Image (cartoon, rainbow, N blue to C red; front, side, top):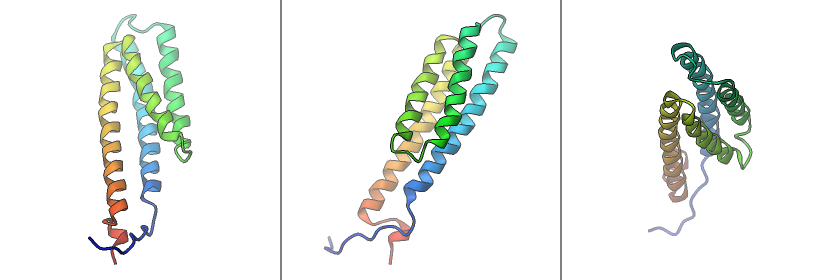
Length: 130
């Protein structure tokens, strides 16, 4: 092991990660909002007005959360919304399936974030190489 200090990366990779999270939240909001229309159309009386309101509010909160990803608590807020999306599975099984798929996507994104943070701490990012 060398004793020389680890150079900081030329650009902040976590800034790019925040952009990925914001984009993912926008895409998720679109899927959730369109999913409500599909479920309401093809299942007679499956979603009551309360369920539709909850899912619409959740979709709008996802759009708001996409703009809050630069805040220190933005990622936590996004993850709370994922719990809310899985909880909408109480209204319809297709919403549960949608929530579980997005939980897997968020899990992969968080795993990649952890990998980048580890490489950055060890000085192994391409932007840290001399």
